[in-house]
Image 1 (cartoon, one colour):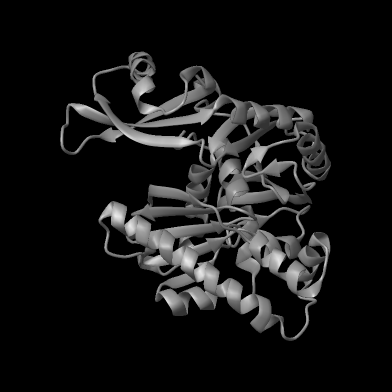
Image 2 (cartoon, helix red, strand yellow):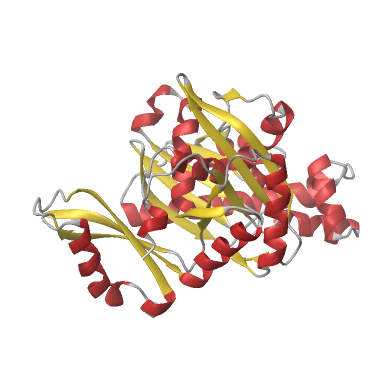
Length: 359
């Protein structure tokens, strides 16, 4: 059981988002007027060190984390990271409301064999009581989370190799949802009572997460990301992958790239987001998404905000998780302004310093 890692309240931690293209780190503090962004850093990841959300080279990832650590507060020794992808399972189950946490743990371990499609000796489990079941008040809703122990262990080892104690291993979808509280005030006032989707588009994976009335209700991964855009640049303009990445960020591309590369990627992006929305509506019985928030590196692609608003008919904004925070003296405002949307997961992990939240 990972209860000692996932559920214990902690002191201030670094939120570390381990991606396939880069590692992002955030340190938050809490003042009288809200959160304070104490540190923010990003470092590129060697290609192949992380593939499809799974760490392939612990030493390489640890080296990148060690570089990040030098840019952050040296006084912080603990860190939070997250697991994600197809091997992570979250389910809401119903248990007797009278059971204590210890009794729940015993009962869940007995029943887990039928709930988790992996051998239990390969899986790390945790759970959290939510609320009383509306249909049967004698039952309580319990959030059960499971991840391959190998995935959890790789993140723990990578953090340790980078000089940190792994205090929390979270689930990425919940880290994203936790950051919702940082950005809901960038939407119209009624958003707190509406259905809001967060679309975090990474290099190879898109995480689609939905909150309703401020509560996380749905998440799903899709195999799609900004690397498709990069590969189109490679193909059209005979560049190396690294050159294409640099050109994508700087905008140093031929005038006709708009028609050759950007427009086709826009089309695919709209299709992927529309598909994710439809899958949510079908499975949830909801009628619509009221607002859409785009985060991740692909949110910086030209015209994304306007494109999705127009094509989907949904009010869309780019995530700005640090917009209303006090910025610490050591943080470069340019980094916040240019790359803030990439730090949604890392910010959600850093928030684990202040409350246990789900898992």
